[in-house]
Each structure stands twice: as structure tokens, then as C-alpha cells.
Image (cartoon, rainbow, N blue to C red; front, side, top):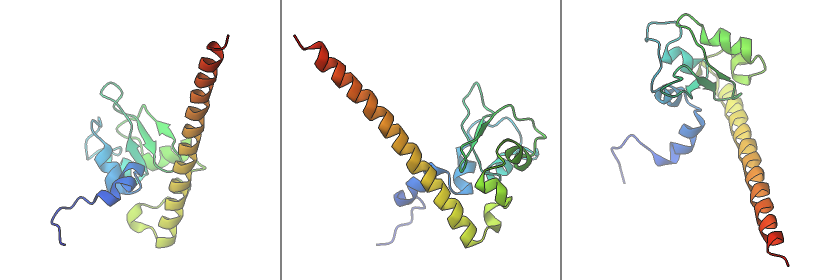
Length: 146
């Protein structure tokens, strides 16, 4: 079966990880700087950032690999330099290489790091919720004891 739709639901998980530069560009809903600025949406996404802002705080962005969130951006800030300054340990910024120039090996290494970080975050969230739920059930059980 051939479909003409460009949306493939099997890729939704990748989109949520902001793994691809296009996903990161698409995440920017209310970025305050124009496309000709040093700190444009395209340059932010190229440097690994996706938008995590709000209507009130519209200049907040987070790295898809290291998770570093930065705000207070200025129009003339260089996203690569700011990323390196605030997160020198980031595997993506250490490459200092936009997605379009990555080798397959580099992309797969970044992909592995992103997936590993996402799994670790999900496990941590699961454990936290499990402990909270278990504590609530235990307290409920204890409160019902004579």
C-alpha cells in the first residue's frame, strides 16, 4: 500500500526525542529573534536546542542530548558558543558539528546517548511514581488498621 502522507506515526518517538534538527526547528513556537539574527531558530536547532519556553518565558531552550536548559538569550548570542560554555560535557556540542555534516558513526553515537538518557529519565520517573504510589497505599493501609 502506498500512502501520500508525509507523516509516519512510527517516527513520532524520534520526534519526541528531538533527535532530528527538523523536529527541533518545529518545536519553536514563539521564539523572540528573527531568522537573520545570530540566535535564530535555525541556528538554535543546529546547535542542539529545542524550544521549552512559554508565552511568558519565550526565550528558553533545552539541548536534546545533555538536557541543559538555557534562557535569557540575546539576539547576538551564538548558540554553539553558549552551549559549549554552559555544557562543555555535552556529547553533541563536543562534536561541534551540525547534523548535516555528521558521519553515520557520529549520528549513531549521539542517537545512543539520547536513547540512553531518555531511558534513564523514564526509569527515574517510574521509580519516583512507584515509590510515591506505594507510600500512599501503605499509609492508606495503616490508617485502616484498628
